[in-house]
Every structure is written in structure tokens, then in C-alpha cells.
Length: 115
Ligand SMILES: [Zn+2]
Figure 1 (spheres, rainbow, N blue to C red):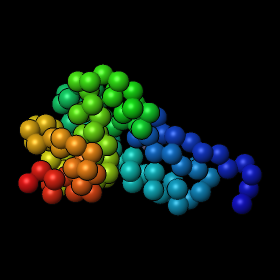
Figure 2: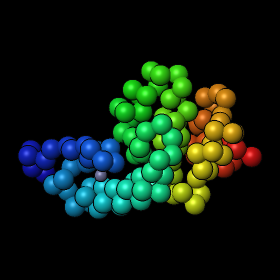
Figure 3: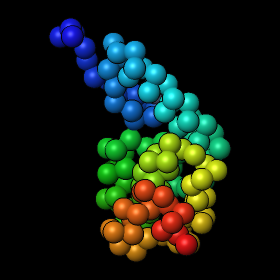
């Protein structure tokens, strides 16, 4: 392996990868396409556009009223931006997990936690 490999964080989808590695690029391309599709589908929904990087989500949590949106963004990312499986923003807000353990379940499968 070359020492020239550098890690890059995509400014659009937040994926961190090594652009010199073909498999990393394939993984990034898959995630990037899904993230951009979700971004288009959710345009105008919520307090700011998605996707959000880890750093952006953590910054949102400084504002109490944005914590739920940050968690929604993380939950959606964990499900590879699959808007058919993930609850809508409205449903997510109505059934928002109240504690950390519920949130962990929500990350695994948000629909389980929301039933
Ligand atoms: Zn990307």
C-alpha cells in the first residue's frame, strides 16, 4: 500500500474514504447517489437540507430544537437513505424515541422502535 493514500470526506454526503482505493470509491458512489436522491426527495422538509455529516449533526445538537432533525438525519443515513423503509419526517417526529436505548433500536430499524 502506498503512503500517498489520503482520506477524503465528501462535502455532499459526508462519506469518508480513500479516493485511491477502488472499493472505497464504489462504496462512496453508492452512498453518494442514495444521499443525493434523498436530498432531492426531502427538499424543503425539515430545518436544513440533508444529508448532514457527523460534524454537522453534532453542531445541530447545540440547538435543542434541532436535535430531533439531527437524529432523523443519522437514522436515515443508517438506513442508506432508503425513504421507502425509513419513516417520513412527520412520522419520525410523532413517534420520536424518548431515550437513548430507543434511539439505538431506531438506528437498527426505525420502524421497530416506532410501533
Ligand atoms: Zn459523496
